[in-house]
Length: 499
Ligand code: AHR
Image (tube, rainbow, N blue to C red; front, top):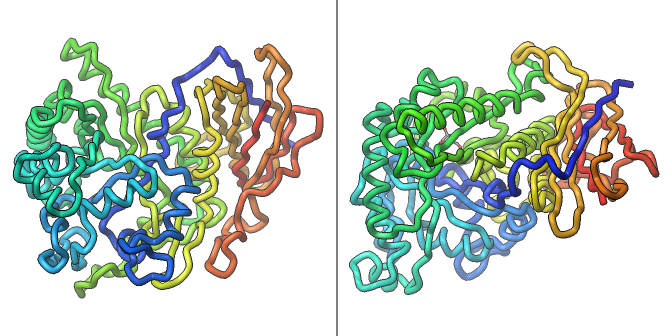
């Protein structure tokens, strides 16, 4: 059997575990909002139409923050359409997804939902087809205490208390030609800087995310960030990164190694931001908001004929996830945690139905997709400080990334209790790997607690409404009692608590 070691040392730390790492994303797209989080008349919906069964799953998932309302959708959105009396809200074509937006759900409904879910809102403003004025108006609506047009409108709409939204995305993917109102880096950077400056005049205590490249494959990746940050450096706090992964042409090995690309993105964006900072003689450090990441079978979506009808909340991007997808999601979480010194926020895209960890049927049940589990476990158990883990693993050959380590891992240590949580993937398609955990540097012996594993003889097994727990973490059969050895099954996500 192949053998890997991970060595932990409480002195080798990365950064505090950031709650904002466990963000998610709700876009007006497909059935994420309508018949996802919001379905008036559903047996589990409350008086506001918010599905309580979904809310319970969102809380269990451990989501800390939710980005809204897009995504591509935001670049054509008029936020004023979605507030006020329902009978006065216009129906509009959404150009991004070729659907009809009823505006039945808008800013107030979303922010109320955030309160119920116990999550922080991350609001995106439209810098595709709109600009500084509309962004400041929205901020006035959400944050201003009262006595002005939009704050009074909020009160008149039944919400006298400001929502106090702190985290703002300055547009979405404006480097992408698919984006309504896409721009050059210079055009976007100037608009983003002006918008942030004006919004801070109204509320000085805001955190801003500038739009980074839509993916590492974009022709301008790196150059876009450099130019945007040259315009915005002193106005913004974070730059966004987006990445989606899928298995292509049956190449499971490369797919399982997807976090090597995420590592590359984080390193490249960090280096680019630091380079701009150096050129500007600035001591400020820009962080990364990895505010769209996930497994997404994008090529299936791209191979479909474009829609010809205008429907309301059609089924779009409803990927059904399997075991290998969950292992990839686990490895992406490992990378996000490992880079907690620079990744200050992240959002899995998306939350419900649309490439989401939660799935619902209209009028019916809600259940956990396979990818729900690594997220929920990492969010629940990653506490305190991220440790710099030394991983010594055999490698395997991938067509896409060359050599990839079979085993990847990250650990966190709760500063109060001393409990360590080790998150590990084995990417081998057909072989278990024996893992030895080195803990010599700790001042007392550590023992393995209730370890779990998510794996299956069928790596393409999924969860369904009738078999919602077909794929879930189970008690780990590979722990040798009294040792720090764990046998990791092939294609597995493992959580090993040490106390
Ligand atoms: O998450 C789906 C879409 O992916 C988002 O709307 C867009 O920002 C990205 O291209």
